[in-house]
Length: 182
Image (cartoon, rainbow, N blue to C red; front, side):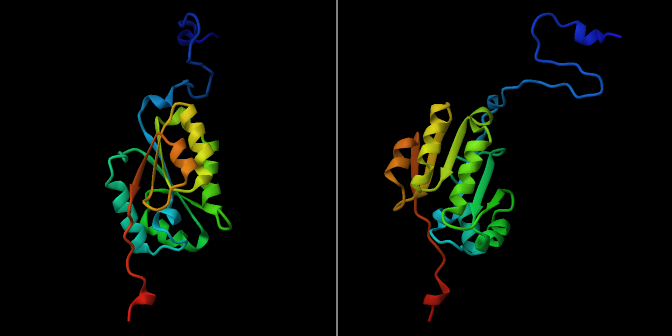
């Protein structure tokens, strides 16, 4: 028995009719102008184990910028020692946890390179000044993604600055370290 809806299409179609399965559509997801935010929280806050208050302050500062819009995807990476503060301080972000040398950076690089960002997002924001992201930022730019790098005033690598479409510098004012309080 033939399917009258499937037979009514003439020529190439992006719809496929298969009994007992959902209809598949080949959509260009980049039509919706969302951004992919990659946040190296340890680099932004400038310490490997930020406090809950520091993470909340960083989130408030970050979301106040004109680069963030509702519906954007935020991915944050940190080491296991910072995971609780980051998870509770920025609960609506996707959290990647990896320890070791450059662990958080490598987790974020995997997200950038393995999740088909150019097809899904029109913009990418990399919140880090680490040069390890330069090649990935360059690759995104070559595929039509507008990449902005957001980083501390004193911490952007030359390669990363050159690879980005634009860069934004900021100063993160940390809470006083309890060890310095008399």
